[in-house]
Amino acid sequence: MDATLAGLSEGARTRLAADAYLLEGEPAAAERLLRSAALRVLTARRRGPLEAGIRGAMAELHLHRGRRRPAESPPASGTLEALRSLTPRQRAATILRLVDGLSTTEVATSLGLPEPAAGDALRAGHLSLAGALGVAASGVPDDVVEEVEVSSRRDRSRGAP
Picture 1 (cartoon, rainbow, N blue to C red):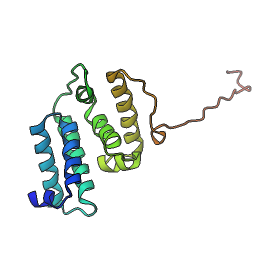
Picture 2 (picture 1 turned 90 degrees about the vertical axis):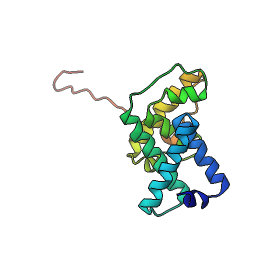
Picture 3 (picture 1 turned 60 degrees about the vertical axis):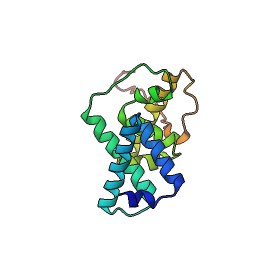
């Protein structure tokens, strides 16, 4: 497993460690998450970029662990506390977007979600994070916002509006 992490550049290891910390919120849990994800990628013999595989495995493990433990929503007074107030899905999606710069499609792929579900998690996470930090929620990325055209017709034959 250490050989897996050693195969990554220093920058990739740093990015993955930062993601793990933001997902878990404490150094020991982040280290366990990173090692578990690396082990999962190593034993699964996944194809593709190693960093992306480990990042996706970390997100999946974080979501799985979030389903097993009750959600905790402490008052948010800082960025990490604000991230803790998000659901595991929102937190993972938001970190993948804001920290790693992944598109909605890439977030969906990393989390193993349909694209609309990833977009919903991104939207809700962005709004919750903005509210918790006391900043305006403007700047939701364009590929997260869905425009829908709504029209209304009157059925005059039935006299209904």
